[in-house]
Length: 253
Image (cartoon, rainbow, N blue to C red):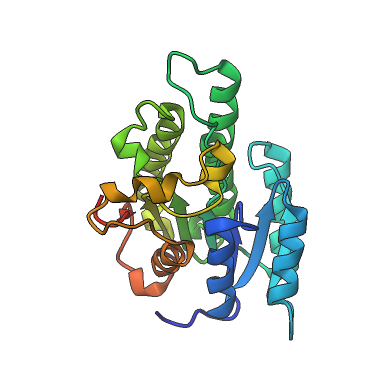
């Protein structure tokens, strides 16, 4: 992986815990200035700042609900003010909405899931494009959306609502990649399979990733650092001819 220019600035939504936190760690280690977005996990975000900002400031945390338009505008304005124009956006913030069959799902769960996973991703992409696009005076950049293999398998019996939101993210990835390719912006997605993170515990089934790992050809769940490696590759100039790709990181599933 190429060492990024020290001026490169990455925004990671949902960056205080799980996959997001490992993306932040790897980005900071490889030379990015990183803006950590969090919605509720202030303690985790502060802990990550303490871990990373030992010799100099390489990370900055911003509280923001990505489903709230003014908050997203503020997030990107603060990123610009603290570190300069954003060159990489990682849309990692997401919620599962918990487990529910379609016959039982509530309108509130649907709204909360779509507001964060779909509307939030759109809003963040919009603000990133406004800073990156050569058509708008920027110098280009990269967007990496964190999708899920659930978008292809459907989440039957558990979370079709979550899978549908990730399907929308896949479509956003494909469409936006074509829309801004001539403006110096690459847009890709990584689609994790079963990854051993807090997400499953928050949904009410902490051992889910390990239990279902038998369904993968590799026979084990993935880890957050493994997903972070894919994200950083997609963000890097090493992937300079890759756009509109949805990369499965799912142990063969």
